Amino acid sequence: MTYSVRILCSFLFAACISLAHAQAFDYKHTINLAGKQRMLTQKMSKEYYLVAYGTNKDQNKANLSKTVDLFDKTLQALIHGDNELGLAKSPSDAITAQLNKVEGLWKTFRQHIEANISDENNMVIANTNIPLLKEMNKGVKLFETFNQ
Image (cartoon, rainbow, N blue to C red; front, top):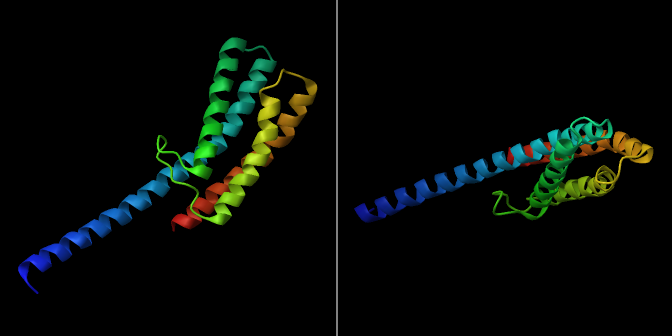
């Protein structure tokens, strides 16, 4: 092998290693954001109930709005990809199906968490919070398995 071919092979090998490392890093970031979604389900519920109980009502309404927007933007990015968040489209049919299930629960949860405070909304939020958390956790586990 000539010297230039050896250099070219070494360069290609290094490029492949760098690409593999970059892909692993991307999924770690994805797993981190997917995991954060679990926390956001709990944060939204807390903020809703703080508003319901009149605790720093205006501030908690503003916080709730931001949390809802962040959860929705991140969920859509996990499914469809988002350059701003550094997320690629969902990498497998199983993950997409699970995230679609989360999205279905999210639509109901969001409808009630953004509505006016009422006994009905309180009950729906209480009854959908944990299922939303659990289904999002299943999505995180699928990302973790895919990354291995």
